[in-house]
Amino acid sequence: MGIISSGFRGRRAENPALPPGQHETPDFPVLTAGPAPSIPIDSWEFFITTEGGQRYSWSWDDFMALPQEEISQNIHCVTSWSKMGTRWRGVLLDTFFEMVEPTSDFAMAHSFGGYTTNIPLWDLLGGKAWVVWEFDGQPLARAHGGPARLLVPHLYFWKSAKWIHGLELTGEDIPGFWESNGYHLHGNPWREERYS
Amino acid sequence: MSSVWQVAEVVGGTHETDTARTIRLRVEGLRGHLAGQHIDIRLTADDGYTAIRSYSVASAGLDGHLEITVDELPDGEVSPYLVRNLSVGDQLEIRGPVGGWFVWRPSRVNPVQLIGGGSGVVPLMSMIRAHQASRNVSPFRLLYSLKSPETLLYRDELRRLDRESAKLSVDYVFTRSTPEGWPSVPARLTSDTLLATIFPIREIPDVFVCGQTVFVEAVADWLVNAGYPAESIRTERFGGTGGIQ
Image (cartoon, chains in turn red, blue):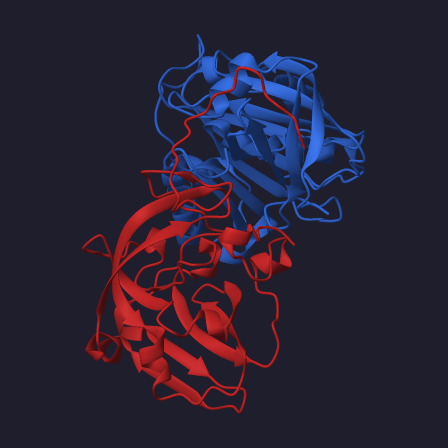
């Protein structure tokens, strides 16, 4: 638009891994809409429900028994910070879906505590998304979504639902929590899909 | 609509403290906003380099103007420029206001408990101003935790409203140093002080908490442990160099 702030130089950390409008932070800021819920491991489960009404679920022990992956990914928050090379451990969503017959194109992620976020199934499958329980070699802190959170690093980080409980497969793309509060339905950081 | 960049003109700048400045912006076609929302600001250097940050709106804003209060981060990229260099008459680009969750709507009838740590008081001030400007008579309380009297934002306005408005009362917690003659020594906010100061659960308050992550985490946990329903507590956090400032 041609508005120049004279005297403004900025940091100009030229990093091609940074999506437009993002800056790198060494910290790990926490952004949540309400208090962090407390979920004991022994009552934890992860579920997937299909449109046909089938329900699949995994206890914490089931979850731990699945093949685990080491993950190193850049994450991008819609509030404009990015954190590069974050290290996680968890289970690829494709692994859970090996026993599920998805008949729908969309998913609503549900968290303990009531948070929801909508994600197309094609953004969850194909080696792009995980349920993670370790960050930087430590069990995931409650403030960051522990005991387990979704990790969908190629979308803005609000899609990586903390305190993940399960996925509800749906026939249409229904707005989740932030998507009903002014944020973009999809959230691709490379296209700056920030707000609706 | 809100995702489009717009030109804003700086029409005023007032230092609140040594490091914090309130910047008044005129935005063409602004049709008001919800109390508690934020805007994104984009600065462009003369070679085209840009930087974007989010700032909470401080003003109730129904008149084509917006105010933000920016607290300078010692090693910040954008905030030192906004606090030290930006002049009246300058233009910059904004996007928003956005956000539909950490907002107060004048149609709410519940009492409102605001809990702010440091510059986390900024979006809460927007709610206080919107409430003052409205016919809504639900009582508001602000619990404001801050380091020292020198870092107090909106000093005169809060003092005046606390004294004159039947709709607002303000409590301060000074964590490092207090004003002269203050009845208590500086101390971090504790669960006991919090619960003794805020609206009790039976009054069914809407609670808004804003501040740095550790502050918000602690306060939200104390509230939930004391029995405040999680769904009555709305939080906004900022930490480190990122997030909403």
